[in-house]
Image (cartoon, rainbow, N blue to C red; front, side):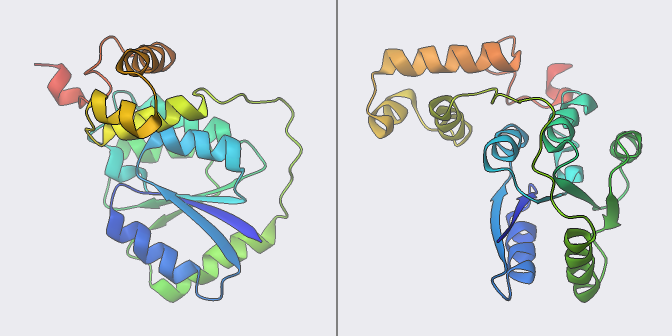
Length: 197
């Protein structure tokens, strides 16, 4: 079964794409609205194709090079289709630099989009040989804490949900900040415009 990962900030776009692509159940589809989680999913789940709309992340990217995590995780064995919603010159320029396989407009008719997706998957058979082993940046537990943290879950609730102490939650958060290069506990959630203040 072909595995596809959808990366988009808009839940309606993700649900629509999932519905469009999975009509005949020939695809296994996962989705996320978080670039950090997306990188980890690419590394661990190893999808055959990633469909991403980076334009939804344009206001929250601290640096355009944050997209490199997605590109480097995909390598040559995972096909990447970037969907553009509007004009974002920095994102378009960055995608051209990485020679994205396909870059399409979100305004493309649905039938054409499905046909293009099927064509991309059929055109190049997956190559699962990886020249270098990529180790996940975050552990599975850290990934779970990050997911709960981004959902604004309190430390006490995270501790209860995961069956750990509150002190351990603080330790996980510190390790996450260190691994992701965050200066403080708020910088992961600030947009570039907020950091200028």
